[in-house]
Structures are given as C-alpha cells and as structure tokens.
Image 1 (cartoon, rainbow, N blue to C red):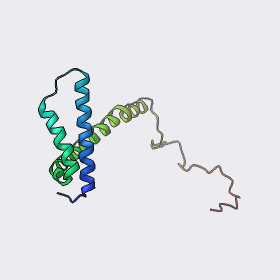
Image 2 (cartoon, helix red, strand yellow):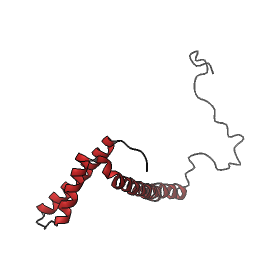
Image 3 (cartoon, rainbow, N blue to C red):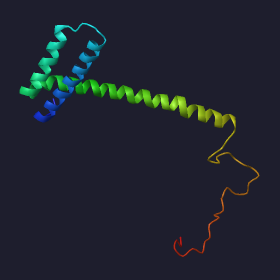
Image 4 (cartoon, rainbow, N blue to C red):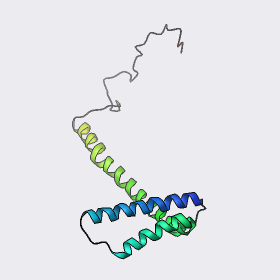
Length: 128
C-alpha cells in the first residue's frame, strides 16, 4: 500500500462519511426505513476519521482501486463513443461527398502540386 498522510486519511474519512450521510438523508426523505447497520457504518467511519484516521487505510486503498478501475473503463467508453458517434459520421459524409481536405488525390492534369505563396516577399520583419 502506498504511504499517505494522516491528514489525507482524515479527509477521506470525512468525505466518505459525508457521502454516506447524504445517502441516509435521501433514504429518509423518501420515507424508507434505515437499517441500524447503515447508521453503525456511518458512525464508525466518522469516529475512525476523527480519532484514528490511519485505521481507514484498507478502505482508502480499496476505494482508490475501485476509482482507478472506473476511470479506466470510463475513459475507454467516452473515447469510443466520441470516435464512433462524432468522428466516424463526419468521415463517412466527407467520403460520400468526395471531399479531399488534404489534397491527397492524384491529379494527372496537374504539372506540379506546389501551392504558390500569396504573401508579400518584401516584408523586412520576416525575411525568411
């Protein structure tokens, strides 16, 4: 396990307890019964964060692993959707409309592919 500071563990404990409290609040507002186990987990996490934050090391390690896995999956999904839902239709439309944005198609009637520069060559501020 990676070495992290007590302050980091305490901050994690308070944030985790806060999310747990929000979850409890949502259940209470929807008139659902809250189990004593849920209250116990919330109280235990909050007390450990206050008294001995290094006791949260295994939970923080597990949470970091879960977040790393979710980040890996989420990145692949988002980039996949971006590619297949945005870039692929644009490429198909350009292909169907026979657009050659880079000018890569061979032109037998052309003597050269050189594009003349239209800027004034007598500019002394940029001689090259």
